[in-house]
Length: 148
Image 1 (cartoon, one colour):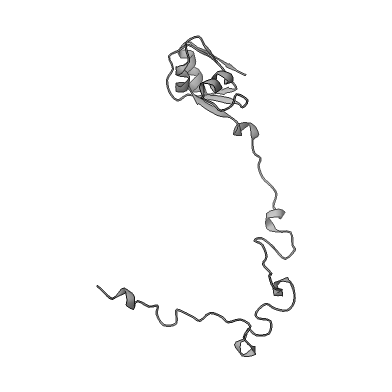
Image 2 (tube, rainbow, N blue to C red):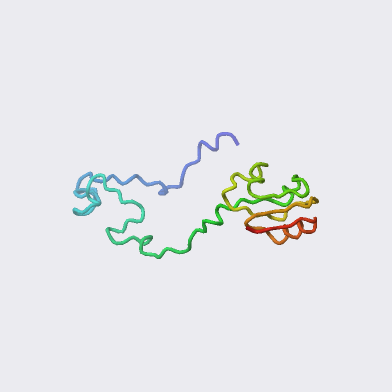
C-alpha cells in the first residue's frame, strides 16, 4: 500500500480557519476584540489563576478542612523478625542496637517489629510497638518482648 498515507486528509468542513480577533467591525470581533467592556479581563496581561472566582471566596477555601496527619505514625521505623535473627542469643535488642546493626536509620524515632521471617535465638526485644505475630515468634523461640 505505498503512497496512501500521504493522500490522507480530513473530511470537508472538519478543519476551520482560526478566529482572527480584533480585525475590524466586519469580522464580528472588532472593537473590544471579544473581551467585553472594561474590567480586569479586558486589560492586557490578564490571566486569572486556577480557581479564581472574580473576588468571591473560592470553593477550595469555602469547604471545611478534613482529617489530620498522624505525626507518630509517619516516623515509625519497621523491622521484621527475620532481621533480628542475626543477633546473638541472650542479647538485648533495642533502638540503639538496631541502629548500630544498620537495620534502622535513627534510634530517635519509634520502632515497630513485624512478623515476617523466622527466629531461633532467645533475645530480649525492647521496642515501642510489635505485631502479635512477631511477639508470638519471639516468645516461642524463648525470647521476651518489652514495649516501651
